[in-house]
Length: 422
Image (cartoon, rainbow, N blue to C red; front, side, top):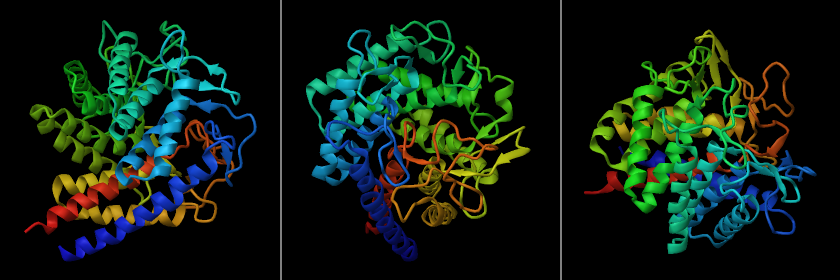
């Protein structure tokens, strides 16, 4: 046990260093516009702004979440200032004053660009606002959060079927041509995972009965419909949440391993003992399912498998690596099995050796199976959404890796404290 605590302290120091001196410092140095009024939509690999790059609501919300959490945990004034700025930008530039909700993107001059209302993006705003409230609570912000929850329920909740609609026009008419799904399927796991995440964060600060009701429905939706019998997540669904045929051949390892700990966290926040009893073994099952087929022998996590597992995309993207180390820590906490700590160390060592850009800061977007970073996009294995030649872009954010470091720092602190009690 003393060996484990000693190791945890050493790794905790490494996570602290990575968070403060690489991830957050990079974003404060290169992410904030020269005039100090907002955030760049994209930078190149060296942190130089990409001229004319559009700005993403998802990126801005994730910046708000990350720096609000960092300011709350560490009491750092610089982090607090970034969180305050991100909140002001979200309200000033992304909020739609005419129709409500938030634009998907704005242009480099802060004018509305993509006015489609994606439920995915709206959920990230609620998630970020809830975290911002934890850092800077006020009655006005709490009322904003509550009002926004009920607004989303009115606009995005499917009335006749389970779950939530995917996308809408600016004035909130259902829009079927721009869903967060490969073939514009009616429902996606990804959108519902982040609605669930947002509602858990919302309930954590407001304790509204209706939020608890919807959060429980979402958790049961995952338990009963989205999580496959083998522990992997289904990807795309019809209106009744039956997985579509093309979807059944795909495993998204990053989402699987992220959900393994996010769903458990949400169950704990909800506090429903029936849900907790069901979710605990499922979380471990999901983690083990990914570990069995998605984690390479060097600790890196593959992106996904297709053709019912016969084809594995062996490139390793930055965000699934971040989620992997948190999930292994969660596995250790749930089971007390130290094998998960050994797996965490291996995955972190892969990140430290290959994913972190020790020369220019932050993390590479994607490396190949051997750990060599892609600095341009390979034609035979395109990335979903993000670009390898940009360090910041609409999807490349401080949220996955920054959140992972903060989760590990806090969880290790909690575990060490519990082990040292007489």
